[in-house]
Length: 251
View 1 (cartoon, rainbow, N blue to C red):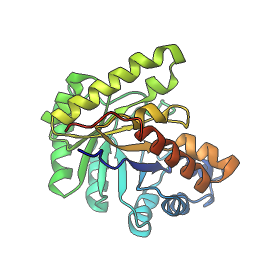
View 2 (view 1 turned 90 degrees about the vertical axis):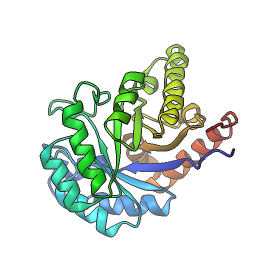
View 3 (view 1 turned 135 degrees about the vertical axis):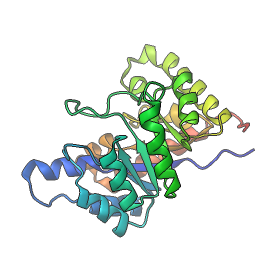
View 4 (view 1 turned 90 degrees about the horizontal axis):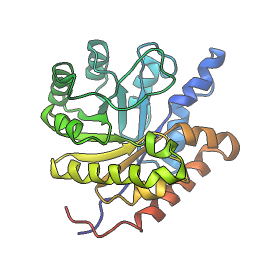
């Protein structure tokens, strides 16, 4: 069986971070999303945080209406964000943990421990036709909890792997590989994201059950030096090269 196509989702949050540093309208995350489409991105991700530190409500509406790519709406499992998602109807919603004091999303959602909070939000979004994913650690208990909560997709947190010293990465990669295999066995679609760079993406792209990578901060940083289009195109090439190293896929 041939490998599933490996999609690339581009997170535009930190274009909005730069914009908000001056309080104006530039640079525009919607324009960044349009450039990402031209460079070959398969989708756009944006995280509307409780404190609106980067993406704003109007950005979500415009990304949904003005960019001809699927929108993945990252959100906390709260009533406020549920209602915004239901009003906006993005292609997908990814439930993530969120704390006001964190600089970025730190680790996966504790689906097992918060089933009674997460499952109703998953159900409400899914009933509206939104494809729901849960951002989780590569932990078998969390993956089974995600399936029990009714999610269609899990996005495995790759930050620990990407941030680890070189000698620690093989064990962390094996954990992601095992989690991806279990995800497929549970009947869920497998995505991976957080912290991926040109240097770390190849082994992740080679995991055969993974069908989407979501990458943001690194590419927005690279865009300062080479431009967003070339940065995305180089990442796409690195993903494709890694995909060629994947073992024969068995669904």
